Image 1 (cartoon, rainbow, N blue to C red):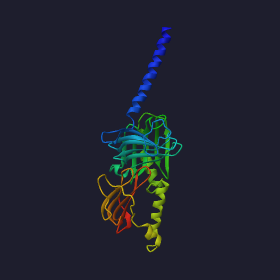
Image 2 (cartoon, rainbow, N blue to C red):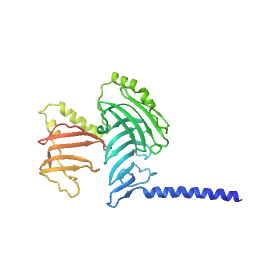
Image 3 (cartoon, rainbow, N blue to C red):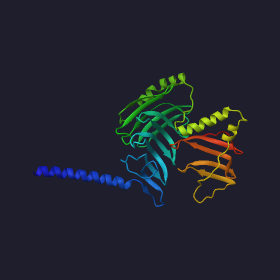
Image 4 (tube, rainbow, N blue to C red):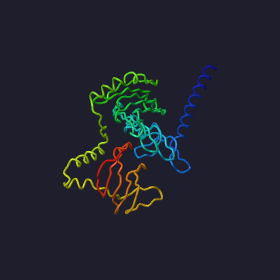
Amino acid sequence: MNKIISILTFLLLLSHFGWSAKVREADTLNQFDTQGKRTGYWVVDEGNDATTLDSESKRKEGRYIKGRKFGAWICYYPDGKTPRLIGEYLDNRPGGAYFRFDKKGELIQASTVPRKITPSQILEAHNGLFDCRMFFHNREMVAGQVFFAKRAFSSPYAYQFWVEESMHQNQSQNAHVDFNWLSQNYPQLYSTYLSVRTPRNVSVENPEIQNVVSKIERIQDSSPVSHSRNSMMNAPFVHAPRVARGVVFQPNGFNKLYTESDEIWIDGLFRNGQLKDGKVFVYDRDGVLLKVRIFKDGMYVSDGGL
């Protein structure tokens, strides 16, 4: 009898500690600092409102510092379980390695924000969510390895990936970080890469952004006197400008305008509410900077450096 009581007591204590851990976890999620800005670990839905880790409405999770995204984040498909993108953020903008997945959870792209690649074209990341090493040529990924922690998937996953005419991969359930495969195989992978393809830009996966990019590329190839060319290359008018707190938009003057996620959108001189001379920053749905459009005298003239 005493043995049964001891077992029941032990199970009760386990359930209590498990519940207490969940309560403590819930208490540390979705917090604000003394300035009213998001801080610590957050889980948000499609509308960027707070939700829970086990909610089907979950779309993103990661850490905020003073209302800005920092460190590793996970973006989910509508099922709230399958990762769509896993990547690093720096001051609210993608700032390191990132990985895209299809709806089956299979890796379809591995890359990095260009400014994070070292002169030797190597990137390493160790952030608690994933450990990776990638090698690049002319800023295009050639080969790499990544090890995802259990928090990203139902179990730890590892990928070996390389590019020939397209990206290839091997995947396995593996929690042990070991880059020996990459070190041993990279010379041959690099040689094959150079022999089968000319490095080129990764295509834009967001259909909406790709449509805009395609239109502008068609404009560049069209006649300089065509009506569509002139109309499509006009600088944007701004109807509801978002400026920094305490700053007033100047219809005739210099302005910095921001997106809803507080990223720089337009920077330059305005005339009558329209950009005259300056830059327009184009992002995809995950905040990855795609293009910097240069405008002069209200007309698009070229793309600037990222």
